[in-house]
Length: 433
Image (tube, rainbow, N blue to C red; front, side, top):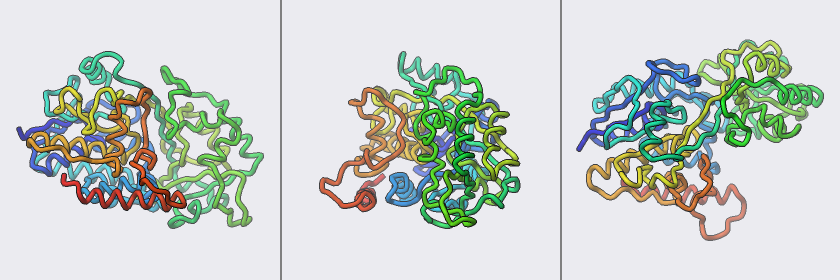
């Protein structure tokens, strides 16, 4: 059998479709946009839409996501290829022009001779072989179908949020300056300082601002890596100063001193005409966002091109259901990929799509699936989502804590992480996939 169905043209689905197509399989890629949209989506006809941030996060090997990106690059990832081609300056991070990125992925998918794009919503799980990669915003009809397929209580929910976008020309650069925290990379972030009095008033306003209605929302369900800024404000007056507003390493050129708190903005497109508020995921009502965020001195007259939004994310109880190839333990030719498996983040979603597709290809060819061990970031994620000993499964970003240990001590966290990375990349070279 050389035909495979992939449902969902997000990061994981596009990566899965590409890897299968590159291995000679005929792929039917189903995408419900633009016929059916979700509140978090905006791009009508583009694939791999970046709903939240435009950043793929840190690019250094001392950071586990940097290792995961390097592993994917070395394995010929479509998503990493397009991200590198459309990157914008972001210090030590890999950030992209989100529209150029999605357009490039869309063009690559449409032009591949082995991929046929099918428009419209899928409401039942197609016959195997199939990879379901419909993401955390899976439609209600398909969510119900997945529940019926696995049985009751197979899914858990959490809530995710996107940050506002600002017109660059509306930022008061007399009150802001360009720099990168810790002087890593070039000075690519706009920094907006607040003194103590301004910060305390801002936190008070943020903590008491009116939220938009989100059915079933509870603080305990908020994913810690993408927590709404107003939730952080309610957790303590200094929470933001030790989080996204920490001033460490950011000296105001006008005073030569660190401000009490600093809001950072990162370029969202190649032209530098749009910036996003770093760490300001929110589900406040739109007028409240305008009122409260305009209390930041340099953003007093900011023009909001898009307000932050809150949306439900859905993920499987994967340790009960999936194996290390992201496949159904009962039927290995039905696989899942992306955030719905419990991997969290753009790069992690891409990685799951890569592994699911490669393993599916090997199974269809009657070959043993590749052994991505916990010595690699790709394998560590696959092991995490399939670990049957986990009883309270929660979404997870890649981190060095889930990789297999070195077995010996290394002085300094950065040095240890570099040794783990070097071992992972050496191991990766031995895996033929």
